[in-house]
Image 1 (cartoon, rainbow, N blue to C red):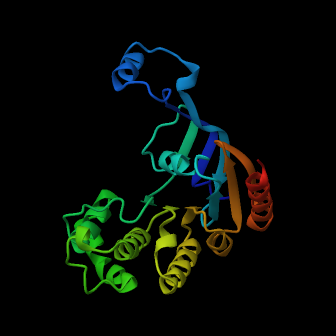
Image 2 (cartoon, rainbow, N blue to C red):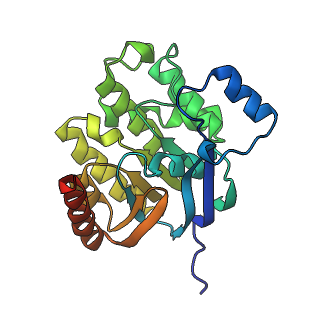
Length: 253
């Protein structure tokens, strides 16, 4: 029997932004782009020659210091950004939780946002509605599910955002730091839900600075630094080397 194909394939991925020199006026920056001038100081490579794959049911963490390219990578996987060079293939339905309730419309209620998110992912309204009870129960959101999302606390939005994204039957679930802002009790509910999703074949790509969560959720970790992969290996190998490198960097003058 043939092995299932990767649900995520990243090959030779480069992503470039333009970042002009400090102090340059907006007019000068706009004219530079208009005239397609190429100044080396304007080029910022957020990702450089990044390649990896993720299989169905796998859980992979992406770690690294601020500015290492982690969120840019998730943006490319979710097709918010386009690569400068290279290839990104993500197969199946993708749910993205880049920050608490990032995809929610603030003036719509939790119910309305849930139905809308389901329909955005290709469900019928009936299918989206059928998941409402499970989402409300998981998030313990019955007291505020009919309120506009803008009235909810950050923790409530994080709970609801995770509940919605994780109950819409994704093939790939992209998470960025959201679990850092929910309470400890909800952490365990999230861990159990992620384990269940993996058993059903959903792949998880998890970005976090909280290494304890990385160790708990992901047997594999990818360490990014300055847009390049430093190490892609079992988490219990990556984290000690990452911590040692961070400590050494902190001690350096």
